[in-house]
Image (cartoon, rainbow, N blue to C red; front, side, top):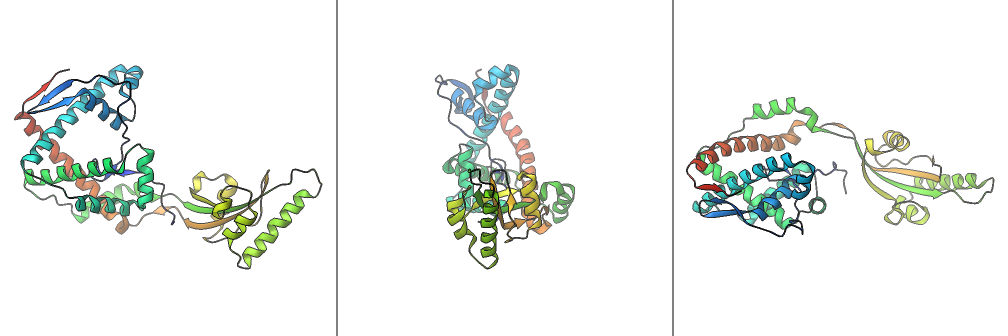
Length: 326
């Protein structure tokens, strides 16, 4: 696996942007009732509670206990959002706006490419946030439908010019600065628990013998499986990917001095001796403009879509029957 930035899972909920945690409605939420009527549709208390959990990542009841005023403000915001969604979905049905599975797949592939992640990393990120892949695909489908709806209703193509993309890049360079990252492997030799005077020397001698074999071309993974008594031994000593800022001072200094593929000298630890290999390395630095151009375009496109959607939905609300029953 190549070194990639720590996965900040993204979602398409605002056109290619942040994953939001999703979870089922808490078990103790057993009652349900209609809380709003939107033309010929309804919104229920169950839906509001589920949406609050999805957006804020906490149980609505817990939020209410923590800050009742914040709870009620959040609930009204969520209700407003659900009303907008109902109006947009009804209009999309009226216009027969369909989004195919292939279109959803292409967007997801684009997201993975922009963020340098594999399908396995995407699934792991979704799982860590309680979001199923099917639910994520549905969110992508709805957002694509919303974009198409805006384009249809506004009847003007959104154009993001090159100079505007470059201007955004210049003003937000910090967003595109990648931290230094390394993928490390290690062989760890524990010190003998015996009190023999020369036991430290024996461990050091063994470490030097292993390093000598490595310098002669021996396979690091094979020697790690054979000799290592530390983490990742059975995986060939693989420790995974780290931001350099995550490493302790000793390892950070060693990793910084070694090139990709480099092997350290013995590193003396309290519990034993460590031999470090830098498997892959990416230094901190600003990502070049061509690499992030597509990502910036999507950000600016989203902003324009959101602006147009807010204006359009306001007009649609004025022509709709909406009754809140709280």
